[in-house]
Image (cartoon, rainbow, N blue to C red; front, side, top):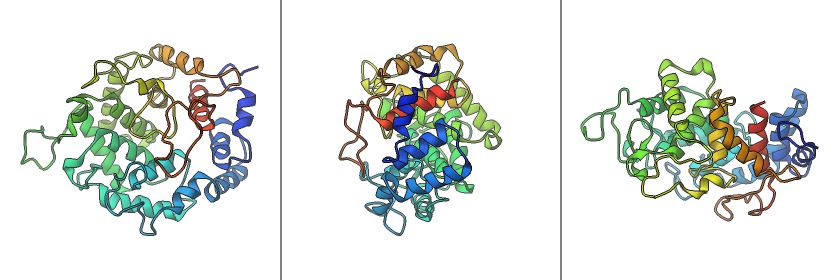
Amino acid sequence: MRFSNGIDPAALEWLLEPRDPGIRYLARRDLTSCTLEELMFLQEKAHSTGPISEVLAHMNPQGYWVQPGPGYFPKYTGSVWSLILLSQLGASLDVDKRIGTACAYLISQSLTKYGQFTVTGQPSGTAICLQGNLCAALLDLGCWNAYLELAFDYMARSVTGEGIAPLEEKSAPLRYYAGTCGPNFVCGANNKLPCAWGAVKIMLAFSKLPKAKRTPLINKAIQQGLDFLLSKDPAEADYPCGYSAKPSNSWAKFGFPVFYITDIMQNIEALVGLGCGKDPRLARALQLIRWKQSPEGRWKLEHEYKGKTWVDFGVKNEPNKWVTLRAMRILKAIE
């Protein structure tokens, strides 16, 4: 018998199996109640064995993966992707100092003086999804400093357009570029139309930022993002498609980890995190998430990066603990 919120007790016990310390820690942290002492023990265990320790084993002592520099390449083992992966695995710089070293290195190489995270380390290398992904990841890893504060401020400006010159004003110190080419999530890779994948990443990052740290500008950007993401039915995800005649089928494929490609579940995660869990416009997307749950209370891995990153996270189209955790978090949150 399932709980009314979609969390099947047997499936929860499956996530809590000791043989998978990483998923066990996150399931305890996010889905159950336990003592601080137990949680700290599980956190240490998750860092010393399993995926977190495997990713960190590949890190250069200076703080980068594979090659020095901004870390966008190679996909998906460079510094950018390794830190995004670590954040989704529940890693923390408070537990392993190597993570702090990696965060500081990435900021020194990828963040411009205006607050843009870029592919090249130069302002021209901006990308909406990259900004959101790294702001969210660094925050989850426990990194908060003046540099990240600047990055969040720029991210808000990139949405609202405040203080950023148009693409055509080549001499302006802070302007839009070919990647992030206009306000309201306009992206060159999406044929200069608003990019919902990028919007989801940015809104997810804002959802993780404590309310006390949200400036009026950030709150304005959040409202703009909510208006955009809720302007369409998230279950349909028929946002502007750029060069395609219809939305990407990746929206309906739930996976782990989640890099720049996104899915309906991550969109709902961002919207729920920003207080929209009871909004009736989420109803069909939540119904889709529940529909994908198996009779055993589990969800399948439908999108994966097998052989492309440091760790593989299951067999495609088989029940998957990481995807199940993602779904259960959402269903618990809306309760």
